[in-house]
Length: 131
Image (spheres, rainbow, N blue to C red):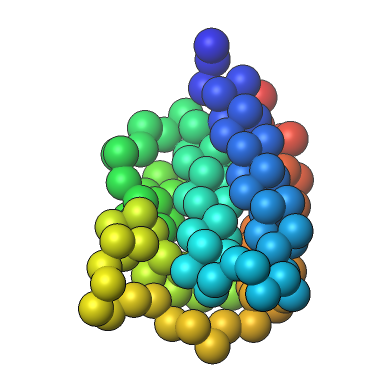
């Protein structure tokens, strides 16, 4: 599988996590931690898709800052508002099991969903131009 095909596959998985997040919004059955996890996963997979599509190797990490930095180091222009999504790192896998200090709970996940949708759409657009 070439880098572009792999990247587009990851982008599809990012959309799946976004769909899961959207299905959970407004439902009291889902905790902020699980909503945040799917938001974080969507961004992580989208960033890894972007890296793959531009031919940049990425580490096995859940750290969104590391992935954003990797894009910048590769010369990719990352719109500054997208960097705010680094805050979702608090919902990465390692924090889901921390019973004492969990991630923030007073998050507007509808607004977060729109931000995640925006970065995914941006990545879809810019990766269409990648050969």
